[in-house]
Image (spheres, rainbow, N blue to C red):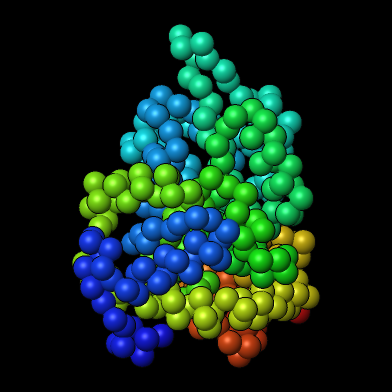
Length: 332
Ligand SMILES: Cc1ncc(COP(=O)(O)O)c(C=O)c1O
């Protein structure tokens, strides 16, 4: 990837003259089954611009209560798009047509804010990287279409979902009006994300990107990492998933509370609360032993994850260190 970055052909991205950015945008649009894609610095910006492009201020956005767009983008949908945010309580990060039919609001132009966007997250970060079954996505999108709602996919980790399901990403992402793909997570790039959708929506997205200050110059330097990642780092996500599964099984055997059903991609959630520890204490103990886990939106639940720099040896080592650090050695 460093070599690809060093050798990148570049131009002025703002003028759409950077051949590497153009190539990345073309490849990602095709990958996601969308007409066009726009390169962005981050997935947060891709989400925010998608939501803004899809709506008018005062419209309502429905998403799961722990969705990244609600819990980790600093109120961006309200700030950037003037959206009314309407969280729904999902089951494992998911919700269905019944929920949308119950929540949708219609307006005659007085009083009531019209529901406009339904957004889903796949894989769902806060529920431990769980994947939406394809059929559930189809049913939900069909229900939204019937209600004349637009649909956004926060597919920051959509390639993990596609690899876990064994389907082309376009089969999932092609159903949505707009899709975010992040390059700096499992795909291993230093930065970058894309938003994809119809030509009309991407014209809006490019304008918004410039207004948000995200239009760049020789961005091919980093876009080259994205092109490299599409060629080399997609199929290998299956290895991350296998390692996460192995880590979860080893921890479970050692008596660490992990929900094996949750482990569908590259996350392992550790229920330190069940051991009588709070997040801060558990994180400190783990860090002392050289293991880096992170917090989740759920009190007492931490997250371990695997990625392209995590080897089998790391998994072996973490499987030994985590139970010790959390004080469950006696169960091993
Ligand atoms: C589901 C989801 N969407 C969007 C983002 C935002 O990504 P970035 O940090 O690139 O803005 C994240 C980051 O963790 C995420 O998990």
